[in-house]
Image (cartoon, rainbow, N blue to C red; front, side, top):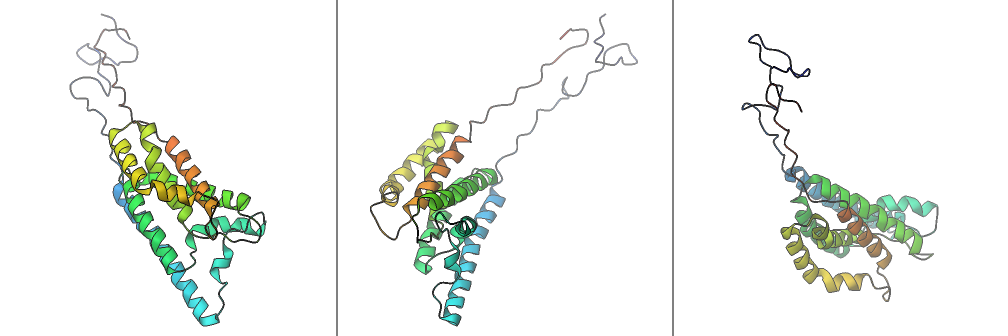
Length: 234
């Protein structure tokens, strides 16, 4: 009888079976998406925007100064304005601006959160950065860019194109529905032929959404370990 040197001998003379072999072996358990933490993170993010806007309104009321926290957004082609990339999505011009972005973030973010916390963090961070960078590069001198609409556009384009990378029917169908609902509005938001709207931030966010979607891939089933009986060469 041939003894595989990788398998120790049992007292009865047979080769012991290692972990993962034999009837007692159990298949690895695949964990599902972490939806709970994803939804908590999403609502905390939106809640933070509301807290900051409330603080900004209080400061405006107390100081009668209209240029308070909102002045710390992205200032294009300014070294001081680079720090605004960090604050841009958290600042809003007024309550209407905040409400519009909050509704879109909660709807689209909830769709993404159903896939877990990792996709939500990925598309949020990437869209946050690309929106700020494009605003800084193309925004035009003498302007300040604020608002979370760049992340909203990141969410829109992420959901629309995600199915092409994951090749999942559900993602394709949801992407089609979101494209129908938000399509014209998204195209309008990317148009440079309007004033008072940061189409640069929208463009950067859309780019970030596509980049984040490209980072997803179809989940593949893990390979099962090959079973080896005693006395058999591998």
